[in-house]
Image (cartoon, rainbow, N blue to C red; front, top):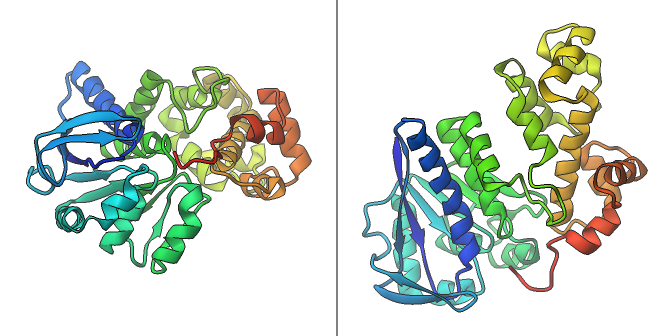
Length: 327
């Protein structure tokens, strides 16, 4: 399977919204070829007309394809950026995007690119993610769309939306996993040195990602279940039951495969989710603690200090992407 992706370009689009996702798809394609396997992704960059467009950061990009005329309609990728409002106001641009959206099997937006999608009407009645700073404004502009500020990315049918900037990488990884499996997605993440959204001070390889990479098929379903239920109380006995093993044998085998106890693994899952919520701009630490499965704020605080060396408050203050400018 070789998917053809049309990437929309317009003045003021954010380069990272484009390059982050395409880097994931390119890496997946390279790894598939390296393994002697078929499939992967091909790209075509298109705009409302031919010519050179200036992306955010005064980044020039020469485009030789017109939106909707490339034949690359397996997937449509729409970036965000400071030029989104001008793009939405461009009648000719929106007409072409609307037709391309209708013709595409999968539609993806990164960051405020969800505003462009919302303007086409395809998000009506759907739940969508967007940059946290634009959630309220987009909700007013497009009342038929439910914008969820608490998630990094969202899938609703064949439409995929993501929050700010680097979450396009997370979304692309999830699509690679859908298309080619968990193992390839994990290999891509390792190759690009990413897992969710990481502050610059974190070690290059996420401890949780390392553990996930080592898990065998025996625990694949359990891992998926943990990721869906980490907000609940997860005892070793319950996890062992889900794995179909005795508690003692489960703890031994799980520790051997991951290099950590089941309790530590669950804590790292919760920490990753808590960090993601703080990255997205969540302000209430007790809410983050509850949703992430820590229960109490103090318990989450101790876990942060033990693992990262800083409290949740210090993390948000120094490393959160909650900036004054929509990135």
